[in-house]
Each structure stands twice: as C-alpha cells, then as structure tokens.
Image (cartoon, rainbow, N blue to C red; front, side, top):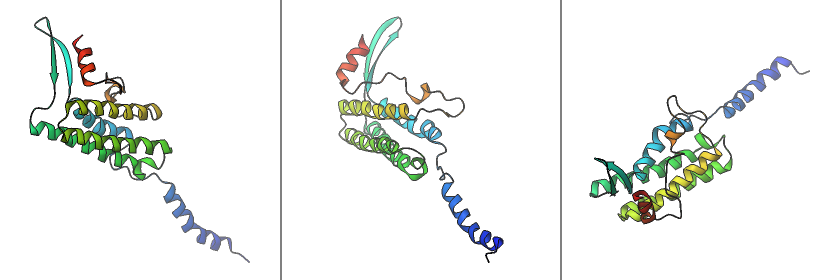
Length: 185
C-alpha cells in the first residue's frame, strides 16, 4: 500500500527543482528596459553623435556645421562604443534576457552584434561616411526591436523619447552627404 506522506516526500524534491527552472533568470543589468536606458542607449548615442551636421542660429544667423572625430582618441571612443554595443547584443542574447521572449528577440540581439562589428570597422578605418551609414543601420535594428518589444516598463523619469525612438536619424538609403544637405536647409 502506498503511503501518501511517503509519495509526497518523494515528489517534493522534484517539485522544488521544477519550480527553480520556472523562476526568471538573474538579470545582471536589471530589466531589459533598465539595461537599455542605462547602457545601450547612451552608448548608441556616443556612436551616433560622432559624425553628422547641424544647422543652428548663432547671433541670429544660420550656421551650418559638420562634425566628425578629429583625433585618435576621438576615433577610439567611437570604436569602443561599437565594441560595447556588440557586447550589449551578446548580453541581450543571453538566457537571462532572451529566455522569456520570442525567437525574434535573438534575431534583434544578433543583428545588433553583427552591425556593431561593421561599426567597429568603420571607426578603425576612420571613415566618417561609413560611421554615419552604419549608425543608421544600428538605429534601424534598435527601432525594429522597440516596435516588437515596446519599452513599456521604463525606469522612473525615462520616456520613450529618451530611448531614441523619435530621434531624427538617417534612413538606410541616405548618405552622409544627403543628410548634411538636409541639415543645411
């Protein structure tokens, strides 16, 4: 005859192990939204802000200004931002962040890693046109992910706009020269 207490005591360890597998993985950088706001977004901004053009009023007169890294140290900062973005893509692809999401999450994380390798090469080559163009691709990967995974639970004080989703970024088919011409108008 089976003793219910004995059966329960034998089943308890299995239930405990099963419940451990159901618990969410440790998130080393907080939630995905926190990780994005604290690490990914500021690093992407460093890369995006390295090359571009602005038109602004100075003493009531419009002034068009182009900018790009000028020193080895500035180019190294751009390269390191690209390296960090690749590493962040690896973190996002880790079980800690990917296990509770669909397969497309991994596609986006892997896409960030791949485009970040191109971004690093553009910085190594000190090619402002390539940095600009790859920056547009990085933005496209980020925007596509944000559409599939809207940042609903943003940290207090952070808005969707802070995440860069409405920032005026170049399109994939726009060259640096076209972008600069648009900024001068």
